Image (cartoon, rainbow, N blue to C red; front, top):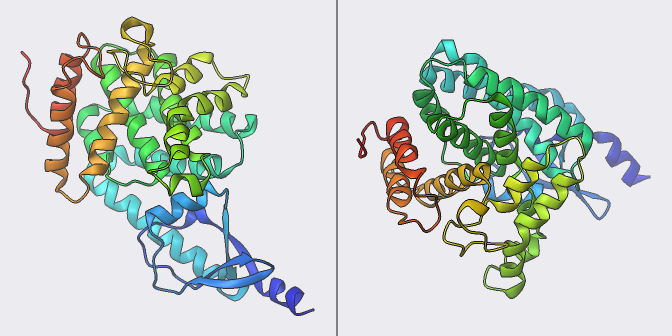
Length: 330
C-alpha cells in the first residue's frame, strides 16, 4: 500500500524539457527498485554528462511531486524562453523563427535519441522539422553570421548533432551545393550521425581504455547506419553518410578504410563538420574566438589526411568568414 501511495504522489516530467546547467525549479526524483529516490534538490543543476547518460540508458522522464508539477513546468518554460530571447538578442529579431525551430529540433532529438531504436513515426517528424529548418535557414540574408551565432560549445548529444548539422549545411552551400533535397538529407544525416554511438552501453563508454570501448567506437558508424536503414522511407544516402562520417581521405579512417572519391560527397561535408565541432568541445575552456581559431587551424592544415584537398580551400574560407572574419585563400 505504501508503494502505491508514493506512486500517487508523483508525476512524470520529460527530461527533454530540463535545461542543462540551469537551476531546477523543484526537487526531482528517480524511480529505482520500486522506490522514489531524490536525485536533485530545487536550485541544483543537471550537468551535460548526466543528461547524455540518461539518453544512453533510454531514460526519458524524471519524477516530480504532483504538487510541484506546475511549478516545474513553469520554471522550465521560463528557462527555455530566456534561452530563446538570449539567442534572438544575438542573431536579431528577423531570425527569431530559425532560433525557435532549432529549439524545437533539440527537444525532438532528445526523444529520438532516448528511444531504444529509431521509429518511422519519429524519423518522419524529424524529417519534417528538418525540412522547415533548412528552408528557414536558406532564406537568411547572412547565413555565415547566423551560423556563427547559432553555434555553441556544448557537449550535449543534441547540441553536437545540431552544431554538426548547421556547419555541414553552411560549408556545403559555400561549396556550391544549393539543392534543397541534398541539404535536407545532409542535415538529417548530421542529426543522426552519432546515433550508433549513443547506443553503446554506458558501462563500455565509461571505460575508455578497454578493448570493448575501442571496438564499440570503431563500429558505431556501421551500427548507426544499420539503425537508419531500418527506416525504409529514408533515402539510403542518409545511411551512407552516417556510415562514412569517420572515413579519411587518405584511407586511414573507419569502418572500411575508404579513400578519396570512394567516400561519398555528403560524408565528406559531414566529416569536416564533425571534426570541427569536436575541436570546439575539446577547447571549451577557451574563449569562443580562441576555440574557433584552433578548430579552423585543425581543418586548414589537414595536409590531405582527413579531408578532400580539392574541397578544402573554399570550406576553410567559409569557416573563417563565419567564425574568424578573415581569409587565407584568394
